[in-house]
Each structure stands twice: as C-alpha cells, then as structure tokens.
Image (cartoon, rainbow, N blue to C red; front, side, top):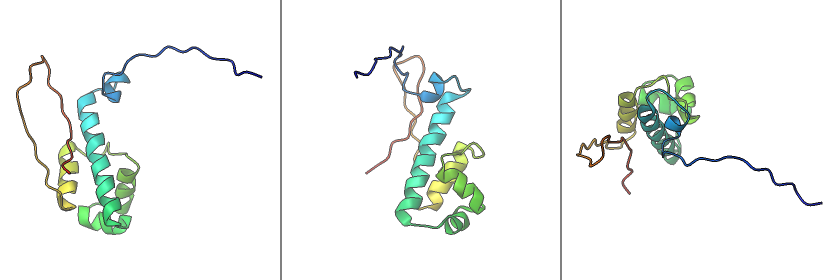
Length: 111
C-alpha cells in the first residue's frame, strides 16, 4: 500500500532559529548556543569528567552537566567566553561595519 503524502507549509529560515521561534534577544541566544557548542567540543576533546571540568571552570558538576546538554541559560555570553579561555582557547571579539541596516553576531571557529 502506498504511503499517503501529507502536505505541510514551510517557510524559509532567517538563519537564526531563536528569531524564527520568537525568542526575546535571539542574537544573544544564538551566540550563547554557539559558545556552548564550543565548550562541549573542548570538553569532549580533552576527555574530561564533568567533575574535573567543573574544577577547571569553577562551577559545580551539575552546571557542567547543563552545559553538556546545551542548557546555558544560567550563564552570560561573557561567562561562556571565560569558560573557553579556561579550557585553553583564545576568544577574540571583532567589530566591523556592515552594509546592512542591522549587523549580526556570530562565532567563527579557527582551524
């Protein structure tokens, strides 16, 4: 028996899922998500336990668990950048003029 096709409406993304979902401060949320992903990758690459990671970052293990699950709401972007620095990463902020009416915030990972 053939599957019945279901039609659905789709719209093109703005490039920021948080804006698409109507979050307040979507640029900030996307920045924090990108930084949290880099923290996750750094912790996995170093094969640290959550307890050891907590000591390096200066936070309790349950907060490391939150970070590993992508839950960074309790941390500011600045604090997440400090975590990356504590894990041996340089964090660089670059400001440049845009041709658009409104600029954007992004995380670029160097190879």
